[in-house]
Length: 122
Image (cartoon, rainbow, N blue to C red):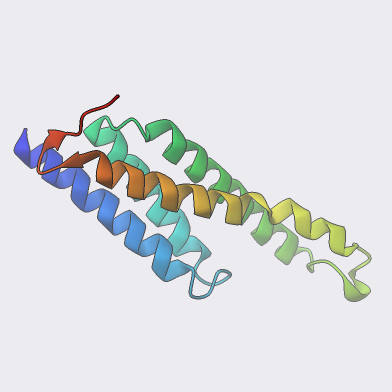
């Protein structure tokens, strides 16, 4: 059981670090952030953390936002001479919202258990 806990902690820490590294360049690092969110979710599910739902939402929002960002970029973006208004930028809003939610969920999941013993919940 201790090996299972160690594996899930490594996955969550790796996910958290990747989400932070990807934020250096949110466009080029978006794939790194998606991978980080997936690793944090996998670690939380592996540990059966109470933050699984939060991290699942975070992963879904990040993946959706990045997919929309790639799609909009593939058709020329928005603003300028593209014919699409700047309001189209709101379609990528799930990406940063999911990123913040992922950071919060990963930190909470990592703080949930210390040294293999669950914290008292009240």
